[in-house]
Image 1 (tube, rainbow, N blue to C red):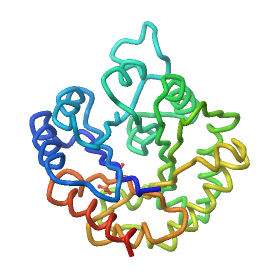
Image 2 (image 1 turned 180 degrees about the horizontal axis):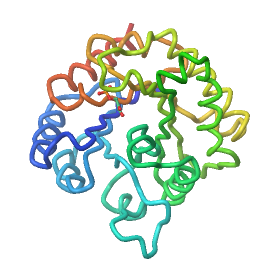
Image 3 (image 1 turned 135 degrees about the vertical axis):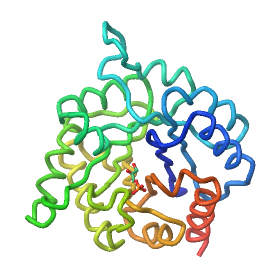
Length: 252
Ligand code: 13P
C-alpha cells in the first residue's frame, strides 16, 4: 500500500492561500504516495475544485458528533462527504487541549464519521509530562478505547495518527524508532479493542514536526503507514518535497 501523506492546514492558511497551495500541489505529479489535504471548512469546496482531476483526496479537520440535529455551528459528516471529503481528523490534540474535547465526544464523532462512509483519522498521543512519567502506553490505551466495538463496512478504512503532543509544531520530531514502538503498541491495542478485522485494516500515521528531511526515516519503520503533517504542509514546495521523499523511500 502506498504511504498516506495527510496535510493538516489547521487554521493557518487563509482560504485564498489554501486554494493557491492546493492548485500548486495538484499541478505536479504525485507518484508513489497518496495525498490528502485538510483545509478549514470554509475552504473545502474551493480546494475540492482546485484538486479536481488529480489523485489528491480531501479531508476535514473535525466534524459534529451527530449527523443531524439542533447543533448551531456544527458541521455534519454527511455534508462533508457530499462536499467530496473522504477523510476526517478526529480528536486532534489541539481540540482535546484547547477546546475541551473528551474521549466520549471523540467516540461519537468517530462513529458519525464512519456512519457517513468517511475514513476517520483518530489522533492520539501523550503530552511531555505524561511521557516523562512513563504513562505513554496508559494514555494511548485510554484514547484508543473509543474504538471498542467499532466495525467497518465494505472497504471502509480506519487511520490512527500517533502525534506526541511535545513533537507538534516544535521542530522536535520523535525518533523514528520510538514512534515505531508506539505504532506497534497501537496496532496491538486496536486488535484488542476492535478485533482483528479492524486491526488488519488500520493505517497508523506519525505526526509531529514531519519535514522533507525526516519523512523517509519514519516511513522506513514498520507499522508507519504514513504521516500527518502540519507546518511543513503549508507551503506547496515543502509539501511536494515530502511527497517526493515518501515515494522515493518506497522505491528503494
Ligand atoms: P506539525 O507538523 O506542525 O508539528 O503539526 C503536526 C500536527 O499537529 C498535524 O496534525
